[in-house]
Image (tube, rainbow, N blue to C red; front, side, top):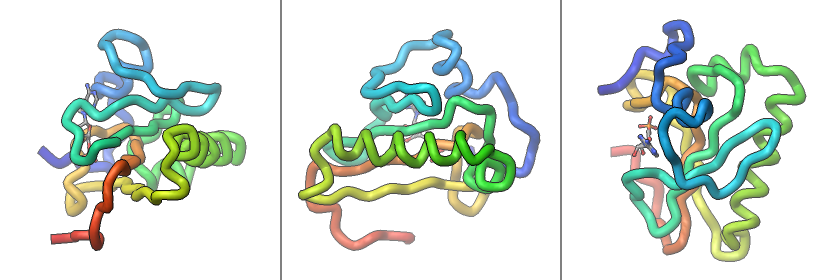
Length: 125
Ligand code: AMP
C-alpha cells in the first residue's frame, strides 16, 4: 500500500525499527548519517536501500528539513556504497519514491541502489 508521505513521521515504520535494531537487516554500510542494507525483495542482482539515520518521511521532508550536515552525509553515503559495491564503472541506478503516485511503501526516506546488470532504459510504466 502506498503511503501518504505528507503525514508526520511514524516511528513504528519498518525502517525505524531496523535503525533501532528491533528487526534484523543485512547491513552493507553504516556511518553517522546513514545505514545501507540489502532490500528484502531484490529487483536486480544488487539492490541496496540507503536510509538517513534521521526521522524523515520522504525526499521532500528531508530536502526541506534536513540539516546541511545530514544531507551532505547521506548523499556521500549513497556514493560511498555505490563505489564500495564496484558499481561506478559498470553503472548503477538510484531511485527514491516519494508519496502516493510513486507507490512509496515505507514512510522513512530511502534511496534504492540498483546494479549488477544492464538495467535497460528507465521504466515509469
Ligand atoms: P518503496 O516502495 O520505495 O517504499 O520501497 C520499499 C522497499 O523496502 C521495497 O523494495 C521492499 O522490498 C523493501 N523492504 C521492506 N521491508 C524490508 C525489510 N525488512 N528489509 C529490507 N527491505 C525491506
